[in-house]
Length: 177
Image 1 (cartoon, rainbow, N blue to C red):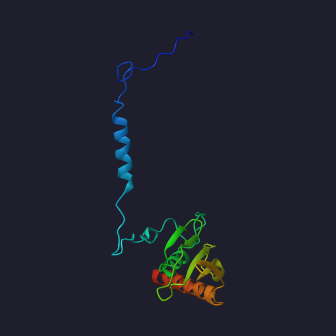
Image 2 (cartoon, rainbow, N blue to C red):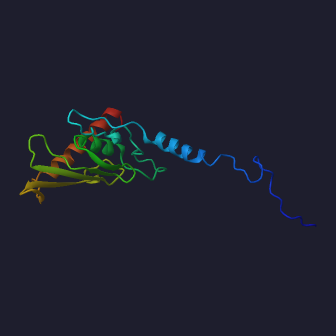
Image 3 (cartoon, one colour):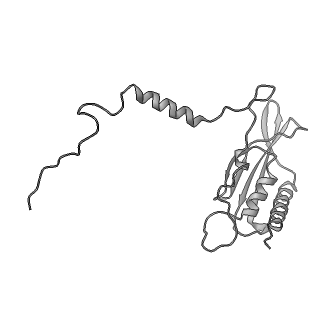
């Protein structure tokens, strides 16, 4: 057996010359970055950007149910019920696989001196009352700053009940029992 020295394969470019001119690289990079930007945000009459809840348009992996072959995700009816129930608030984050919904601060139209934030956890692949955990945070505007204040005693239970009611309605509408 004889060993031969390594010889690289012939390239398409002549020796010492690149396939793309150096000036083309920044232009190619700029074009790809601009293409990734998407459309500009829409603005309302006051000039503020209109929030876009893209999370409501996609249901990323919330495939629920009790199929033993699927081990990730949460119950689809609870997930969709939580999204539908909390859709009046702006979403900061939503992860269907982990079952976590975080809203941004929301100020009700009737009151300008208080705001709310909700965290919702879907904990199970089963449609049960203990499969949803909701936390509500309230702040009041006092003396020029936002101050944490307690929420009404029934707020968390009311929101949880609405999520469960919506989830049951979705399950009924789908024809599953």
